[in-house]
Image 1 (cartoon, rainbow, N blue to C red):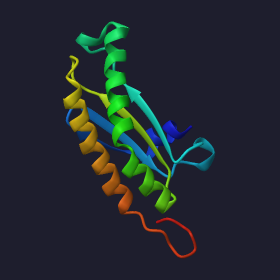
Image 2 (tube, one colour; image 1 turned 90 degrees about the vertical axis):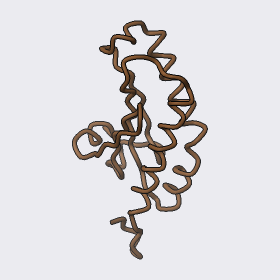
Image 3 (tube, rainbow, N blue to C red; image 1 turned 120 degrees about the horizontal axis):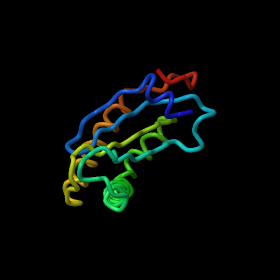
Length: 127
């Protein structure tokens, strides 16, 4: 359900080889944690017809995310926000981990900037 909300009302941001689709504060019943993440590597690209190549890129993306997610998690907790994110890999061929890592850093910095725009009202409502 969180990802349905993401595609209906979410935004996107292109960070190098990764495209981030995101939506803040999806309906509460759709999330168990402050952040829901999905990773997609399209099969239609000529370099990813085989599952092992798609899985390699997914592993690289998830590892880059795992190593850099901490500041975003802390900000979401501090502001009592929830976030649904889909990260899609765009290039037609696999790229080195360093490229994925740099794109992930840019994308997460952007998400942090977007989260900082939210303010917590005295009554606890988020605007």
